[in-house]
Every structure is written in structure tokens, then in C-alpha cells.
Length: 193
Image (spheres, helix red, strand yellow):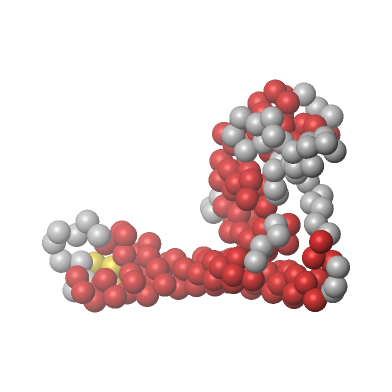
């Protein structure tokens, strides 16, 4: 059985990349970089399969049904078989990357549309969620605690416990919050501004 948080993570990476483009004020170059990242993410399983097939030809391996048999030393038989089956991950990564690319293109279109409106360039876009400046790592737990009026240590302990129980999903979600949401603006007095 495939690990369900792994499947969910693979499905959400593309939209998460689009979320970074939508919540950050990126340049056109930044949007294009994220678009390239989505393309690489979507095609990665196919590239891994292609490399595995190329290596099997180079090592002189033969296939029996779906398993590779290589001449001695045969330490790479299982690796090549795993690389061959990587194309099945494309069922999850390609739709995710397509959704991410659509989100990035929409974000880019909205950014170029806003930049053409006179006087709008002076207005700074306000984020819905800001990471806290009172942080241990990235300020995500402190911001969630402040927003939901929970104790900070409780949120940190719950996050650490969930990271142990559901390792991949929580770490990627935390990393996404770190990348997608800006640090809260510093509070300066009117005299300092």
C-alpha cells in the first residue's frame, strides 16, 4: 500500500508552488522560475524512467516481465526496476504541475494587469497571513498561535508531534508556509518613518 500522506503531498506540490506565486510579490522572472520548477516537477518521473532505461541498456541488463536482471555485480537490479516504475508517479505529478502552472500564469496575469493601472504600484499588497517575528525557526507556529489565540508552546508541541506522526506532509506544509507567506512588517512609529 502506498503511504496516503505521500500521495497527498505529491498532489499538492504544484498548487503549493502556485500559492507561493500568489502570496508573494514576485517579479516576472520569479514567476517564470516557479513555472520552470512546476515543469521540472511534472516531468521528473518520466526523466527518472528514461534514465533508468538508458542505464539498463548501458549495463547490459535484460528484462523478465517487469524485473531487470543484470550481469554481475548485480547490485543495481532493484534500483533500475524502481527507476523504471517511477513513471507511475507521473499520474500524480503531472496534474499537480499543470494546476500549479495554471495558478502561476493566473498570478502573473494579475500582476501585469495591476502594474498597468496608474497609481496602483504605490499600494502594497497586503498578505492575509504573516509569519511572526517572534520565531524559533520561521515564525509559522507563533503566527498560527497568535491568529487562533492558542498558546505558542502548545502549537509548537502539536506541530512537532504531527511531524513525527505524518512526517512528509507536515514538513512540506511547514516549508510551504515559510516560503509562501512574508514576515510580518516591522512596527515603526510615525516619527521613524
